[in-house]
Amino acid sequence: MDHLLSQLRAAAEPTRLRLLALCARGAFCVTELCAVLGQSQPRLSRHLKLLTEAGLLERIPEGPNAYFQVPASADLVRVVLARLPEEEPVLQSDRRQAVRIAAERARAASDAFRRDGMDWDELRALDLDASAIETALMSALPARIGALLDIGTGTGSLLELLADRTERALGVDASREMLALARARLSERGLTDRCTVRQADMYRLPLADEGFDAVTLQMVLHYAEEPAAALAEAARVLRPGGILLVADLAPHGEASVLTRFAHRWPGFDDAALAGWLGEAGCAIASVHEIGGAMKVRIWRAEKLPAHALTNA
Image 1 (cartoon, rainbow, N blue to C red):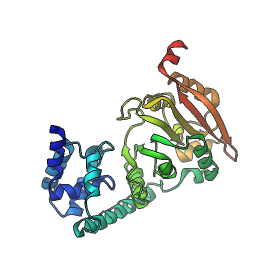
Image 2: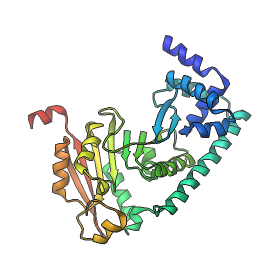
Image 3: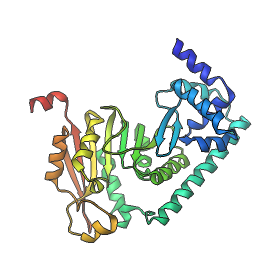
Image 4: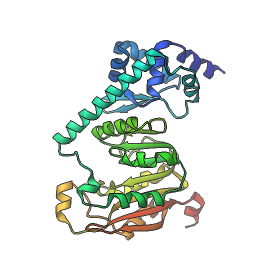
């Protein structure tokens, strides 16, 4: 009862209700929230601290900034917000400002990508059959996914693709510029209620053990200095029986690709993936190859239960 009362007291204030309504639509940093609400940073920081302590918001550090969003477990927030009238002028104004900020965020990120030579889609830059790859990924995953983690999410295209099939989807990436585009994509398409992104190192995911039903790594592993370590970390956050899906290049002899796109590995063969996944407690269930100038393979693995590993 005490916890519920503290949450109700935290929400029962006009500015904090506005903050909850905004952060339920997506993740925002303090400076963005100041711009939307037209209030000072010290004042909003106090409100955000109170809401975070009450468990109504979660604070996600990202480089020099921190983003605030409504956690999946905060059912009370959704109940309260459902009672707020959509036509409330203050909330309508806040939503318009939030859309403007999301557009500015995406534009700034795009400028940085062009400046750094990163404003491209790797699948198409490599002349790969993006449509066939997406179809194969969709086929390799269950029709319904409880919790999905996309490692190296980039601009969030896979989250968008799988949004209708997931109850909760999280994308992680080391690049703040990529995440800015991903947030803009998800916000523009109205997917922030179940799809979120955050900055994270794929070798040290800030996530609990066995919290996801499916984990995907699409065109990520060839950048990894230690693929085995990245797969082990992905398997750690996967529940027993869950699916670990890896899409990457098959072995190739294109040295120019390594130089031009800064790939660490010239593709992967089945034996290497099977060995690394086995060490991570997973077993390959199927392999699908997509032809072309450069072949792509999709390895579908399942995490073995603890007793199976003990008996192995």
